[in-house]
Amino acid sequence: MSLLVSPLKLRELGILGMNNRNIGFIGRYNQRKNYCLADNKLKTKSAAIARGIAVPELIGTVDYQFQVSTLNKLLEERDAFVIKPSQGSGGKGILVIVGRRGDKFIKSSGALIDDREVRRHSSNILAGLHSLGGRNDSAMIEALIDFDPILKDYSYEGVPDIRVIVFRGVPVMAMMRCATRSSDGKANLHQGAVGVGIDIATGKSVCAVQNNRIVSQHPDTHINFDTLTIPHWQQLLELASGCAGMAGLDYLGVDIVLDRLRGPMLLELNARPGLAIQVANQAGLKHRLLKAGEIADGFFSAEGSPSAEGPPFAEGSPSAEGSPSADGSDNASQKIALARQYFTAQTT
Image 1 (cartoon, one colour):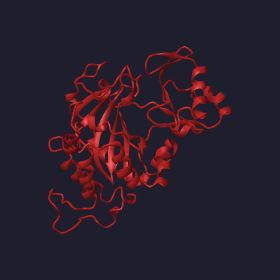
Image 2 (spheres, rainbow, N blue to C red):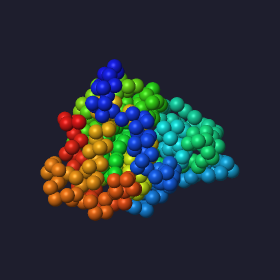
Image 3 (spheres, rainbow, N blue to C red):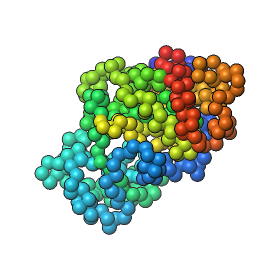
Image 4 (tube, one colour):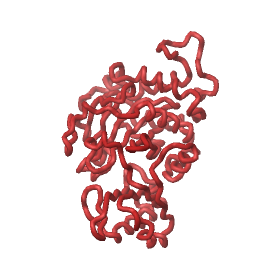
């Protein structure tokens, strides 16, 4: 995808713009009352645990300023952990500790900090420094992911995660976000991480971008992205698709990490996922979202042609007006099969 593309070409490619995303999909399909679960990582984790969905271990939370002084006690048995705001966004306020050296903590970037800086970081989280709207917040302390070693060389220090855009329970587009030295071990594209587009059909890489420029290798590890194939791909898509029903959101981003022993684990949900995933995939979202709506309505058969007998799973499926997905399981396998058939890198 060239950086100089005409508006006509963008429409042909089905590029989804910010206004269209906000009004045509988020505003239309996501009921505001359901944002709270996706916007609060603690609520997301609780809901996922209740449904038996794998999530990173929660070590504890800090809800009040007077509790900050107890952090040393809470962390004394932990060499590696992550502290994050429960209502943060865009990777802001996430502190990743990968080990200890003497009385110092080692950040994912290799920098050393002492316990006073850890407490100050937690205190800032409580004050809302990193939260949506600057509201008072809680600090979550999670165990560090023991991520799948197959993906080790695709990220610098930090954990690579896979974002899947899900529309009405149908996985539409995916990318892996790879931390770099310049992103300080974090996986957010706007902070300098690499986004690798992933073929929905196969789980293989399509293209990779950093700072909106196409790259072929990781800038720090120098591994080629064209060799990347995401393991547990079907299981990962099932997890992403099932989160739509859990969140009550028809348009959402699902962030997943691959644990070495437990496989795909839900990291967090995003009710307003960004659009850079289109650049990473060199494809537009709009055509896929329209097709996903047809799949959700059951207008296509498993053989790939319009169903002559009508919607095969219309009963119980979301309405055309965009009511929250309630199934998450009944028709998920059929939706995923059709998504893998239609949303291939070769045809979209």
